[in-house]
Image 1 (cartoon, protein in one colour):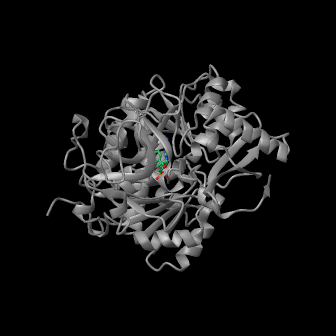
Image 2 (tube, rainbow, N blue to C red; image 1 turned 120 degrees about the horizontal axis):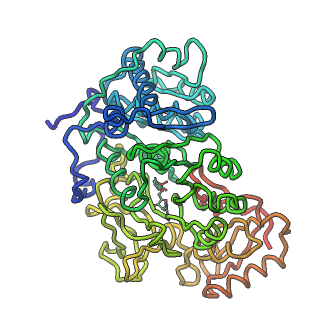
Image 3 (cartoon, rainbow, N blue to C red; image 1 turned 135 degrees about the horizontal axis):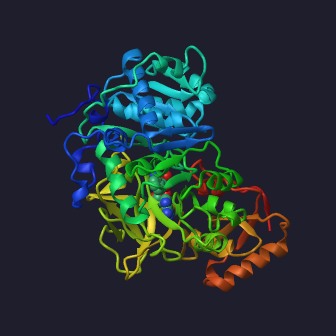
Length: 542
Ligand code: 3UK
């Protein structure tokens, strides 16, 4: 039996069969991890042990924690988990909070005790939380008091969830009161590099959410591939952004990556455009992480960011339209760093830094990973041809007891479900999600290309392009458009947009139908919910 620190073997018992797991690559020297590894050691304990304890680690409104502060908080919580709540290595601990310092301290506490962090999106309702608890067999939860209601409802119907502590709570039963009785010292559990430490639920748009399993070594792999080769952060960087810590995009960008280089992070509970601009200026942030739509919304307010502390802007979560890249560069002078990542792969695997960015391309494969566009037979597609994106590297898909494993992983490759092409320079170009490709009168049309064309029209704030059922053509291209303030929906505006698209891309791709709406349905991670656009056929058609 290989070494494991887990006493509760649930995650190990529910790994996908070896034959269904992807191939893992560990060629880079920095990926040769020791057999025993707890990611809290390199990310947190080591900074303190090596004399960096007094450096700033986390800031938030009214709060500033050094590395030593975060370690002391995490240690106290670890002691509460073990001594008061009986957590043993391998147990799943649900975490639920907006992005704030206590959420980060709880995450590290879970790592330190050798348990499995199961972070949940703040907006999840009781029904969804119940599914997470049942699927992951969650025994313990640490939750921000302000998000208690839905968890209480879920807990009432979840017999396996036995212990909950609320934080950011001044009451006698709160986590802080329990922490005050505990020591600020804790011996981090010596986990195996392949002990699961994160159960990340996918932000999938359809079907029951899947839980992806990540080991301590996966957490560290995400820190040694994309960040040093593409983002290249330094210890003086100040990270900031909007993705929730429950989303691996946010976990990496706002917690793991800054700590991996001894830098600091600013955790904000609110990510509205003006709040974010103000916060960048107030905290002198140097690196920003958010989704393409958020950059688009901030661009109009972003003037003050030109020449400010802000140097690097990372976009992920969905395709970055070239129109948005241009808009952001015009507003701030900053060339964005686009990157495609996935919950199944932990973080970004194709990207380009600001010097190598090319409009309309996501970038090249990140060192440590291999990527290939495959045809429908699973063979590499010729250069320039659209096919299915396949990836492998040090991280990869392991769904917890889920038959969809066989769909994501094939022949050792992770299939992300994206239609991509690769050009002669090795740049990967996103076309659409494979399920979202529009087929109209025999033509394959990628909605995002039509969206990019529409986004360049001055009257368009946001848009989504889908295939609408059509008796004659199978599907027709349909644009759902949010106009910028001051523009009224009208048949004339629809015509104007249609003509505009016809002039900028192949005319057969123009939207035969245009619908105006006040807002578009999005997930908490900034993704357009195209399936909802396809379902809703209300609104005024022009
Ligand atoms: C899409 C992109 C084009 C793509 C994520 C960075 O988004 C993340 O994870 P999810 O599991 O979704 C994965 C899917 O989202 N996507 C993400 N980024 C891009 N498409 N260009 C992009 N830059 O369909 C992918 O398959 O929610 C992103 C880091 C960690 C993540 N978990």
